[in-house]
Image (cartoon, rainbow, N blue to C red; front, side, top):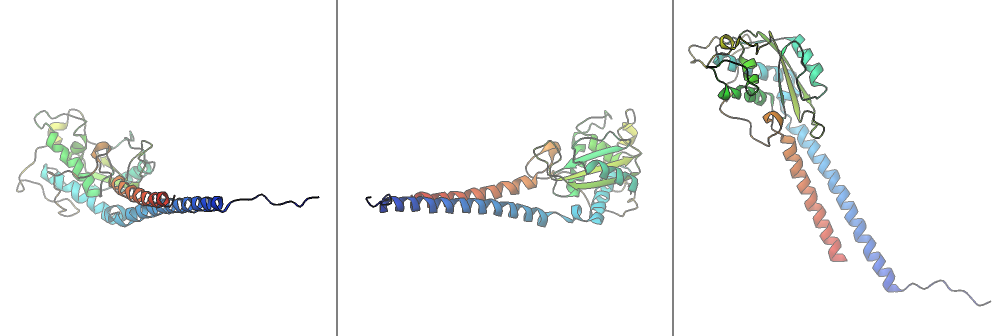
Length: 260
C-alpha cells in the first residue's frame, strides 16, 4: 500500500488566515471594551452629578419650601408648611414613574428631568408670564403656577424618584411630584386666590420655614427640551458617551483595515 500524505496547505494560505483572524478579534475586543466603558462612564457621571436636592431628603424639602414660598410671597400668599400625609401620597404615585396626574383628592404639580428640585419650582413659577390676571381663569399652560401660589392652600408634600424611562412613555430623569391641600385651581375662585405680583414692601411675611431663596423667575432651565419643558441632562451626557464609544470603535476599525 502506498504511503498516505496529509493534505498540503500552502504557507501563503496560513499567513492570510492568521492576518484576518487577529485583527478581527482585536476589533471585537475593542468594541466590547468601548461599550463597557460607556456604560461605566454614564453611570458614574449620573451618580456623581446628582445634586443634594435629589439625594438628600432635608435638602429636597428645603428647596421645595424655599422656592414655593418665595413665589407665594411675591403673589401675596402666605407660606406653606410641609405635610407628611401629602408627602406619602406623592411618593406612592411617583414611585411608579408614570408621567401623568394621579387623579387624587389633592392639588398636584408634576415635573421630570430637571437638574434639581429648585429648577422644577422655577419652571412652574415661570408660567406666570403667560397667565392672564385680568381674566382670572384656569389654563393648562399656567395650571402649575396657579396651584403654586393659590392663596387658600396651606400645606404641601412632595417626592422625588429616579426614573429615566425615556423610551416607555414614563418620566425621564428625576421625577418630582408635589401634592397641595386645600387643592387649588378651583373654577370660579381664581380672582381671589391668584393675585398679581406685589412690591416687596407689600408682600406677606415669610412662611414658617424662613425667608428662602429668591427664584429667578425670568429664566427657564437650559438644556435639551423634554416633556413639560423638562431638561434631559442625562440624555446629553449619554450622547457624549456614545460619541466617544463610536470614535474608539472607528479607530479600531481603521487599524483592522490597515492590517488587511
